[in-house]
Image (tube, rainbow, N blue to C red; front, side, top):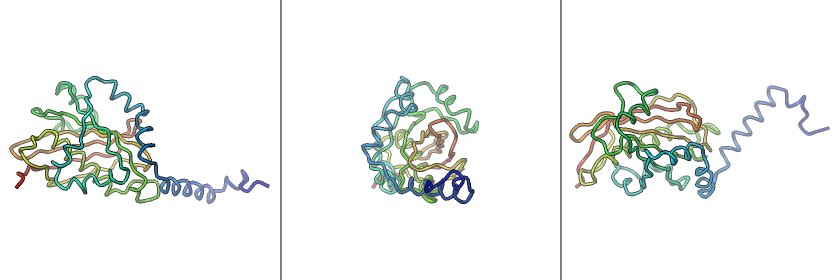
Length: 224
């Protein structure tokens, strides 16, 4: 007799146990940095961005120093040991606004006067960030959202102006995010004034489902 017969597997309690076991394994299994880089390069969402001439790859490592507390804001990257892929929009402002208009509030569209109207990131949600088995902890989601908005603010701020410091963060969790998966992130500035900015961010699944929406108010503080 098989160890797990079809009749046994059809029982609700056994099905729940199997699902839980799969989630626990997913939470325990951790991909290596080499696996993440190799798999990420083959994602359709990455290929689509890289084949679109309006997106320009950005090396964000140099800008992290301009984000106050970047060691903690980007702490999740030291877990997976892989920075997210980053791309800056080089098309016109109207096209950038249309890019996010379907999901964004009318008063939170990319604003004029920015060098990078929209920042796109493709990030791996490390297995070490889970709260419940197989799901990212809400606090880690907030860190990634905060990091993304602070980063797009830094990309639109001269280094000589100072560092980006967050004053507020408002999160709208739309759908659970599973660990061991990839997310596409759009971050942009929708309002700016002397020494301050307001930013927004959207998280999407590779299939295009909205997962998270957030906004943040940011200050630019002079470095001593």
